[in-house]
Image 1 (spheres, chains in turn red, purple):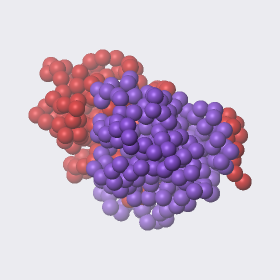
Image 2: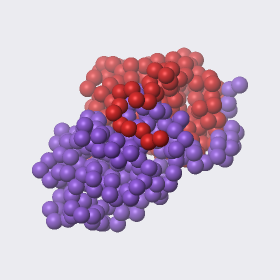
Image 3: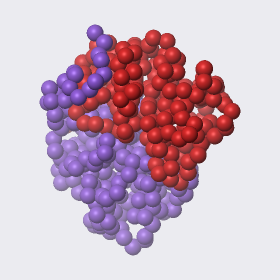
Image 4: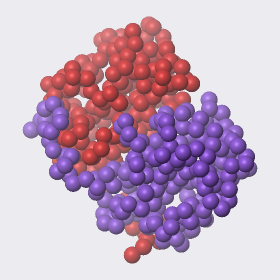
Length: 217
Length: 217
């Protein structure tokens, strides 16, 4: 199972936010929710080989980790639907364990903890850290294994402790391009690279197949 | 100015939708609003060389086109903020002209019309149509000019009339990968390819520059 781990430095670890002002009341949980869509959903489908971890560092109940895997039902791409899901899962006090993930509904789990707990859940997977000015992911031949785990910062990036811990754990820095992008766009670009490595180009990029549009010379 | 043109086959051309149920009441305007973020915004910045057109094909006031360029102020990445902007612009009856775009606030314009009006606004720009099973955009050497215009379908794709009209206008079919993606992800991948063509790799993908993460051998 591939993983995307998104860090929300101030994203609320409780359900205590307003749906009508998500950016202003949730520590920018909206950024992380958009990453759920980017990581798990494609056109009319869900990626069956991807799990998303949201590491929530904000509010009195932090840190907690919300984990969503492809068994999640009725996962919708719009922010409000994802916010409703997060609210339902994060609101009850009693649910989070600090030793292992507790599945609170199919495919949706929660844990009291932060990066250490996430790394423990990965059992030695290859770790990639999305950074600026690092090796271009297109040039990284190691990329594309079924257990790859990608770590992404939110609009505040990684805090120094997280960056050091990821390096200590063997995290390999990769970059998606020359511009600093929104976390969800970085996930989209990683997914696209993985899609390409998993599918021989002749099988999909065949001009004229399946399209009626005329190509200019 | 680069352009992304997103077609919403049933996306409402009026402000008559509920913020609390955007997917269910707007003909999936949410899909198009997410494309605005993907096309115009990056981390803590707005792309100064991009304009987005939303071609709204749904409801009694269709077709109308909402155009957003980088002079738009207070453009935020979350869906609700973008929906509030769309509502404010689409609600007044009197604003749309059927001959040219009317700027209703800085950088935000509206027009009564559809594809023909959009093409007229492009004045002979190179046209690219995002399709499945077409030439891989990485292999398309023509890509990357300052006036490139990219046409993207929503979750329903292009209707036959639009696809034929784009082909007739010289639209060149390109593909972003082996999987059919959400419109916003397709835009993200196109933007990344353009970013890369505009920036020599040595200038950004320099392992060790600007990052403290250790790279595995």
